Length: 176
Image (cartoon, rainbow, N blue to C red; front, side, top):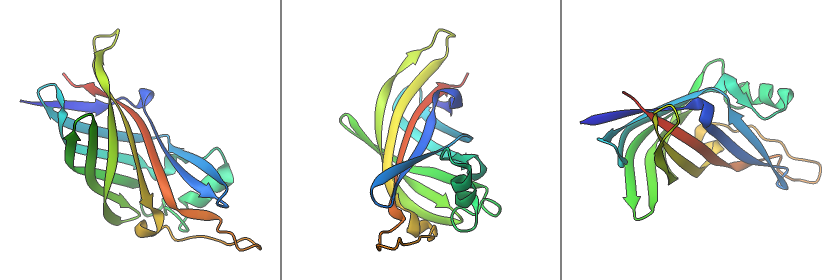
């Protein structure tokens, strides 16, 4: 019997990091996102039907000018592409490590990606809800998704790296 799980957004965060001027990282995150998955019974390692969405308009890097630029046609083009989407195609467990394979769509471009998944455990919270926790990490090339804007400093340094590191701390709540 399939068990449905839904993300707990108040106890989850979805971040990305990108090198700026190739010397430091800038961290951004999405304030509005959703995710769901199904398992066979309560066995979290049988995860399937994994779907994640994030609203581009909710992107935040703690800098309003940069956020506006990221939402513009130079980057995510939030006006035409309101969400990024991930659909899992395979959850692969190997000992204590897991990989989540799936299709990521950004700005209308879909590419396969593989994410590393660390299972934090399953517990019943003080309100009687069963929750499962995960740390999800990965890396993508922004250029493969059409995020091509860049600039070069006077000294020839690239302003924004191509590699984007992904990091999510997520809790899923078992649905009744």
